[in-house]
Structures are given as structure tokens and as C-alpha cells.
Amino acid sequence: MISVQAWSDAQRLWDFQQMRHEPRPCSVGIGLGSHDLGVADTTVSLYQRGMFPLIVFTGATSRTTRDRMPRGEAEHYRRRALQLGVPAAAILVEPRARNTGENIKFARALLEERGLDVSSVMLVSKPYEERRAYGTARKLWPAVEIVSASAPMTLSEYVDSIKDPRLVLDMLVGAQQRLLIYPDQGFMIRQNVPKSVEAAYERLCVEGFTSRLVP
Image (tube, rainbow, N blue to C red; front, top):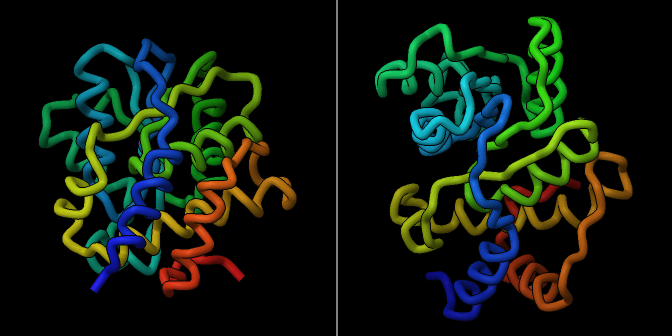
């Protein structure tokens, strides 16, 4: 049973993690691989709205996706996009990345190998990883404009879609930890974290939502 306080703290992290960027046309859309096919759906929706002419799906597999996405996250995203009507010529697949930094580095390298001119990127992630993805991209690809995007969902709606409340809270805590420790490790830019958000994160750690923390 998840306590009322834990849900309140999770909501605080959820709200903080979202960048609230207004979608605008970009050179390319990059869908970051994960367990959540909703990222592919959101990327397709933005493509169909004319936000970018080309999609890059990036991602190998992880402990949460190796069973449900055995061909790799990016490949499963590609198949989903094709089912939703995106032409194959508008999709590139980067199948090796196993973390957010590699998502950015490998997608950038793929685009550069193709000789494509990229001045702006719409970075599509899970709703609770917008800020982490943004901070990573700003660090690793500072020359391009980054626009963050995700499915327009509430925390409650997202939990219902994933059907695993504890996993969602664990992931929220993991994303927040990385915002706190990765700048010192050179993995992302430093972003101001309000004390109320830090306190919510610490309470959730005490309550045991720690399976996605890094050592």
C-alpha cells in the first residue's frame, strides 16, 4: 500500500520533472527508448502534426524491456510508428543505446553520419524524464536547441496506463536522483532543484522507492 504522503511526494517530483515546453517545429524528433510504447505514440503524433520531418528512435534493451521488447526498444518503437502510418523513409533506428547519455550521443552520431543538418531537436521521453533528458542533451549536444515533449498525462493517468504504481514511483525517484548527482559526474547540466522537491525525494527514498537508484 502506497501512503498518501508518498503519492503527494510523487506528484511533486512528477510536476518538477516536466519542462512544459511549447511544441514547435524542429529539425528532428528523437524518441528515447524505454518500457513505455507511449513514447513512440507521442513521437508519431508530433510527427503527424508537422513538428519534424524525421524521427530517430534510439534504444537497445534493459532489465525492464528485455522480455517485452526482445528486438530492442528502438525497433519496437519503429514497428509501432509504421502501424500508425509513419512512412519507413521517415524513421531512423539507433539500436545500441542503453542509457540516456548513449541515446543522445548515438542518435547525434547517426544523424551526423547521414550528413543531416540539425539545428533543433524535439526530445520525446516519458513524462517523468523530461528534465533528465533535457539536462543530458544540453550537456552532450549544446549546439542545438532542445525542445522537451512527452505524453500529456497526469500522474494518475500514467500510473493507470503502466499498471504498476510502485514501478512508476521507483522510476520517478531514480530520475530525480540523477538530476542531483549526474551534474558533478559530467553527465548533464546542473539545474536548480527546489528544496521542497529534494525533501519529497528524500522521503520517498526512506519509504523504500529505491530500486532504480544508482550506487
